[in-house]
Image 1 (cartoon, rainbow, N blue to C red):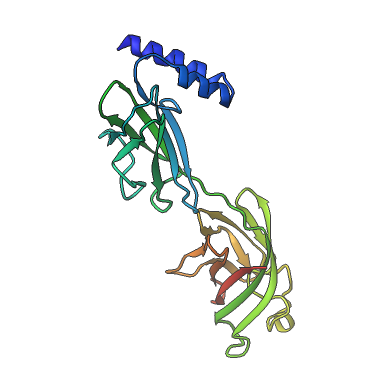
Image 2: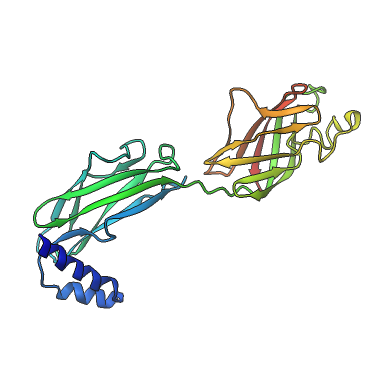
Length: 269
């Protein structure tokens, strides 16, 4: 076994130092033992985004065969990743076709189940011939926040002093990025405080209801924000979210001072 590992190490070392054409020549001219291995080494990282692009893990063989070679993909019991929660495997076997050196295993990440802290999927292969094949795949949720830009905002009000008039309002609003995944909106009220019915009697304007909020994996949140009369919070029993497919943001807000509240839907322009 030590001899096989040594030969494999030499072989892989030659592969990594050559251009693609030279790599093909080295593989074709290899005359050592038939060893199956993970081509990327012993470990790797898979960052799962909302698009849920699968991870591809390649296995290789140091020689070809006149017939297909099928291996069983084994999930080690020591894995911290859970099937159906963090990931799924399309198949429990992988086949290197006849006269070929390589095959691929696809791991599908599940964005809603994976955490930013990550889990580990430990894979091995079972089959004929020497197998130097164990692989530790770290599956990590990657939340890329990119909300800055212009939006058309439609706000439906649940309560304010001048209902039932001005029950809805639509206007263009800019979301400004002030830090990583942190954003600023000048008028969180959707126009009620800036140009709406609160402007003349209460003297509100564009700076009366500024809010800075954060976005983490599609969830909008904020702390210590206020209008002129008190703090503004998430409407009880609701969640403010981002739809990753459409880019639409839905924010439900509630003012503790006098109970003004609404649901603002931001559609990218």
